[in-house]
Length: 125
Image (cartoon, rainbow, N blue to C red; front, side, top):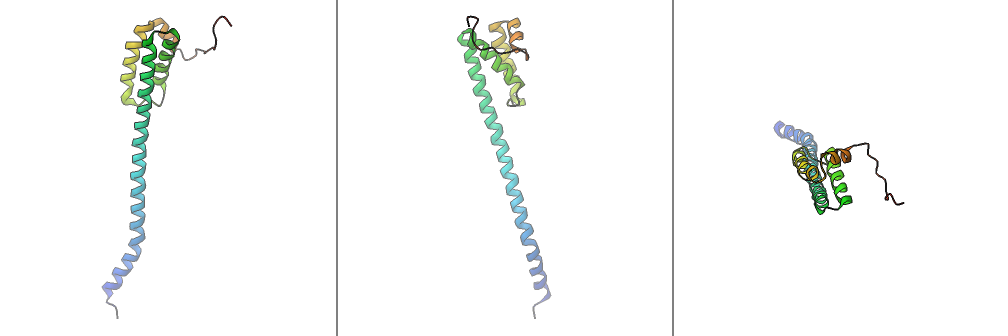
């Protein structure tokens, strides 16, 4: 005859094994999702800084089309969900320091207008 405590331990282990396995799977899934969110934030930040660097380079080159493209890029980036809240102040300061000083407040306001239509080609066409 099997002692009662061994039967109880057997039943408890039979019930707890799947529950513990489910808990391990849930914990693994949670840690994986957390890691994926951190990686996604890092990727967004990398892409943001790449776009900021490109826009500033375009503005500083002095070419009129490049300056316009750089200002529009910085302005669009400030409205984008790609920009992390922690990086907003940096991009806003760069936009103010580089773009407004380079093209002037009136031109910056004109370029920043959300209703501005982009027309390809010049006046010669």
